[in-house]
Length: 375
Image 1 (cartoon, rainbow, N blue to C red):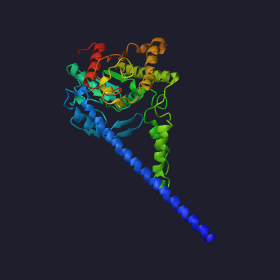
Image 2: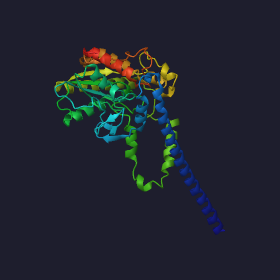
Image 3: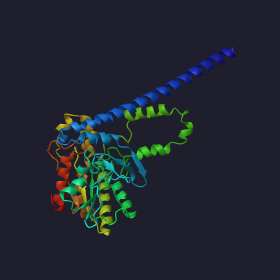
Image 4: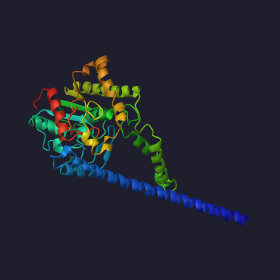
């Protein structure tokens, strides 16, 4: 009788082990299929070259191929990350993660302008020659040395820390004459944990919390856990995913941005460097023309119209605080509101915030107008 019980238990244990192995193997297979699918989606993104925005730009197809083939990024203390070095026909990034601007040695006799911002400043959607910094250089007849410190997903505070680090390290000698910080899109609370956080914080937290992974990898059902985590993330969103910002969160986003700009101005004033802060346009503020996207690839908008409208409601608080909060009054002379500069103009956006060359050109023209420089 005992032998029979042991036999039944052994069979059940073997069946259980077999099921666990099957579940783990299936989870691994599903995750691998998802990776392959994401890769295909990345290639599909290259169809953007067919947008009417790029009809007169024969480099567009090459650009999106190169953009899709860009490597990841290196982790950097304090400011988060910088893109890996890359050299192509349309995209060039140096070993410090800085995108090419003039492509020549800086002329120390000319004034230097450093541009800060996220991927819109970095130049997602355009080749090296059509980034905001290089258009600025060209439209001023090369009168200024320009440096592009833009980086994907950077908040204004990350840009400030990166700028400080470069100055302290002596990477910006002689010091620049002008800093332009182009912000707004990445300071929304839509996908961040809270104020003064960045988009990678949740990802880094998960990595830090994983202990003894290598030793336990084959005993801990790692692929199954990953799959369960992805399912939970999809159907039971956490704070890391898109969530409707509250009024308080919108106000905090505005305060974070204004406080960062105030820190920048204070720091740069001590160094005798001029400063301008720009509230950038995006597809959820003002009256943008989006027919090219809606007729082509609606999912490029990233957020629904409702999510975007709520996520960027904080722009209203930025303007309100500038007019009502005494400590921000000093920023008014440095502030440029570009929320509406792209209103009703077709074929500028390629997604919810990135622009084709004609969009960047409008931004630069408005910038030069505010600075009273040649267009």
